[in-house]
Image (cartoon, rainbow, N blue to C red; front, side, top):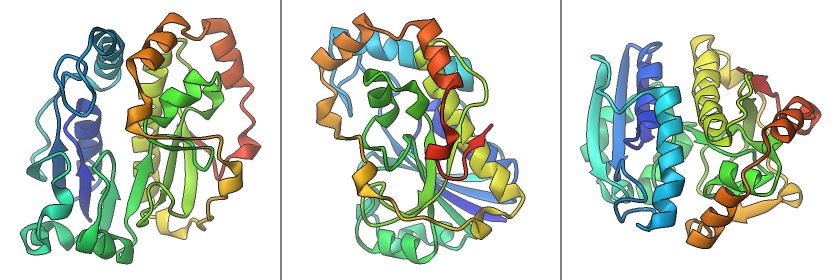
Length: 264
């Protein structure tokens, strides 16, 4: 099996690449790169003292769950791009990566132009870190926690579409284990998304899952990157979920609200 993944360069993205490489003969990883020191370096997220404090917790949790940034496995071919450049690259430059059996998008920029047409036609899969259609847009699991709804911290595996996170859904994934640290729990949700996708790919059951259209009437919040301000981050850091209430909410999650839920 050949797999192409369009992703980024943080350790969680590299972990997905390596997980796919563990079940595939060949993986093509097209990685859009940004700083691995968010909050300290101006990039996708702005540099500020508040952002440094917030992302210090994020980076620590990511390291706990995924380890430090690392090299990919031997059966991975990598192409590094600047974040946002993917849609500008001519298809012929990606030719080797566009002859795969499976296409996965996780953490790449919003794909446009001929590439999105090609990927949609080939049935590409998107990993959305957030539970659609309830939370859509940017940093969805953060906003679920900000709203006091930890039971909505998870991932949606859905078909890639031209709209942002709007493709037909296949299943939702949640971490089986519970962490009282919301930052660690968020990273555990990312790992459960990787494991859930690989679970179905390895068993060749992904394509047999009926897809379901998203109902926009069920949307609780749609967010953009600019919504995540210093004020919001500081408010969140000052009012982190109480561990007992956090764990109770997760254990009381009503799985009937979700599509083919997988706890892994």
